[in-house]
Length: 154
Image 1: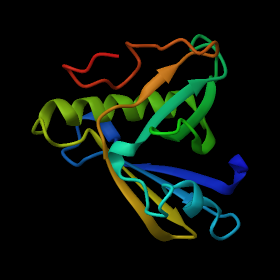
Image 2: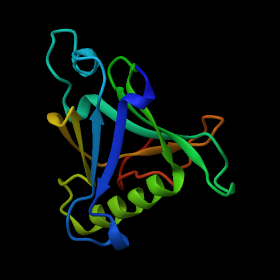
Image 3: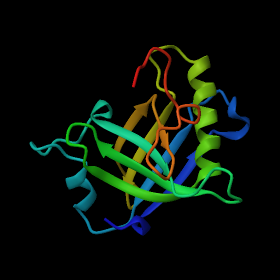
C-alpha cells in the first residue's frame, strides 16, 4: 500500500500537558477495501487495539537538521504491516512527549493516546494505545525516545 494514500494529523498536543488525550488521525485515500482487508483478522473482523502495534522508524539520525521517519501500524499476531506513512521525527517525538505526560496524569487503565483510522473521512477503527516504540535507522530500539508504560518489559 502506498504511503501517499495516507494523511496524518495530531490533536491536543500543545504544551505536552494538555488535559485531553493526544489523538492521531490517519486518513486513508486509496482503493476501497484495501485498508479494511489489512485491518481485519482471518475471520474478517476488524483488529482490536491489543492486536495492533504502533512504531516509528527513523530514516535519519536524530542529530540531523530535519530528521524523518516512518510511522507504522502492524498486526501484532502476524507481524504484517497494516500501514506505513512518512512523518517528521520532531513531530512524532513531540507527540510522544504529550502522550507520556497525559499517561502520567491519567488512570493506569487509560491509554496514553488514541489512534483513529478513517477511510475518506469515515471512521473505520479507534484504538487507545499506551506504547509507541521508536527505532533508529538500523532497527535498534531507542528506549528513551519510546513511549513505554511503567511495568512493561520488552
